[in-house]
Length: 462
Image 1 (cartoon, rainbow, N blue to C red):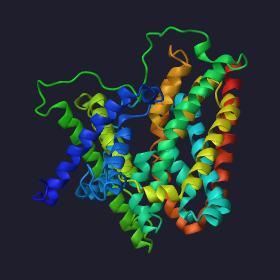
Image 2: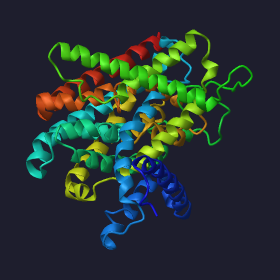
Image 3: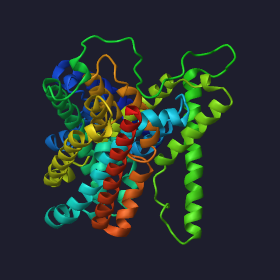
C-alpha cells in the first residue's frame, strides 16, 4: 500500500499519523477519566500510543509488523527540533506590552523565585551527576543541567537540545530528558494539588481559597492580555495567515541573530555557537516583531488567541513525535538515574516554595508561589492550573504577576538562552564547577528576593 510513496510523501503521511494519534489520545482521555483528572495532555497519550503501536513494542511482539510504518519514524524524530522554533517564536507575539516598570513590579517576585527554582535545579543536577550518577550509573557528565531542561523546560526544550547533545556524544540524554519531562507533568499537578489541599487545611497558611468559593468577574491573565477582535475589511490575509507570518518573521530574525553570533564567535576563534540551537533566539525575534507592531500601532493585526492556536498545535505535534520516538532501551537502562533526579527535583521545589514563598511575597505567598512551583515541575500551564486551585476567584493578582513573569523568565530559563547555554558550559568546565557556580547564583537570587521583599514591606509600613 505504501511502497510507492516518495520521501516527500512520507513527510506528509507522518502528519496524517500524528493527527490520528492526537485524536486517539483525546479518546483515551475520555475513556479513562483519571487521566483528565491529573491533566495528562492528549499529546502525551498520543506519543505513547505511537510508541506502543510502533516497531519498538508492537513490532517486537509481532516479529516486525506494526501499525506505525518504520518510514515515518525518521520524520517524527526530526520534527521536535523544528517545531520548537514555532513554539518559542510565538511566545511574545500578540501580547500587550505595558510599561516595563508596571510589568516588573508585578512580576519581580515570581521571576526571582522562578530563577531560584531553575538555578537550584542546575545546582542539584550538576552536583548529583558529578558525585553519584556518573560514577555509579554511568550517566554522561553533560547531564548536569538535565533537571532544569526537563522539569522547567519540558519536552520541547529537550527535543530542541537534541542536536547539541548528539554532537556532545550524549544523545541518550534526550530520551532520559523526555522521560523526566513526562514524569514532571505528574509531579507538578499531583504534587501541587497535594500542596494546595494541605495549605487550605492549614490555619497558619493564608490561602485565597479559604476566603471564597465563588468566582469573581476579574479577568484571568493566561499569558498577558491578548489583543481582541479580528479585522477583515482592510486586510487581505486571514488571522491565521497573519499570525503564522509573524511567527515566521520571528524565526527568521532569530536565525539572523544566531548567524551573527556564530560569525562573531568564529572571528574570536570560538565555535560556541556553531551547534547552538535556534529556538532561544526566536523569542527575541518575537519580541522584536511585537515591538514593531506596537510602535506602528498595528497590534490588532495579530491576535494572541490565534498565535496560541498555532503554537499549541506545534507543541502537541512536538510532544507526540518526541515521545513516540523515545528509545525504550535507553530509557530502561537509565531508570535509577531518572528516579533519583525526579526525587531531587520534587524535594527541591517543595522545600523552596515552603521556605522562600513567605520571604518573597508580601501577602498571600502560597497562592502566588504555587504557580512558580508548578512551572518548575511542569510548564507554564501547570502553574496556571495550580494558581486557579489556590485562588479560584482571582482575588490576589497571582495569575497576573505569574503571566508577566514569563516576559522576563522564558527568554532566559526554562528553555531559554541560559538553558541552551548550559550544555556548552558544562562541556567546557564540567558538571562539578557548573553545579558550584549554580549554587552561588541560587544563593544570590535568594538574597535578592528576600531583601527586595523586606524593602517593599518597609515602604508599605511607612
